Length: 143
Image (cartoon, rainbow, N blue to C red; front, side, top):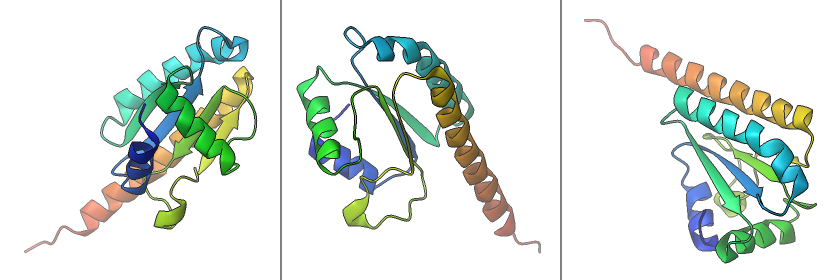
């Protein structure tokens, strides 16, 4: 993923929604359980909402990713162990100093909870796409 300063810049200046998957694919049994689901949804969402969502894998064995994870843990954004999924919507109501607070999250290896997380994320993306289309059509003027 990114270093902490790059992560903070990315979530502050969102031009698209962001989903981050903190994982340890070789060591974590729960990560191994949900990784196929995460991969499927990442591919599906990237295909449907190509310019509206960024899907990022963050292996916590990487020092930069672990630093971001520990930063989020210090802010009590993540409270348990991996795997963790965080969703940052394109339109956040958080002020610039709290941009690191996600709109939705999921922790743990439950397949059904992981699917529920992605269902909520997709609902958010669909609502944003509908709002964008409506705003774009409203800005057209007939002469």
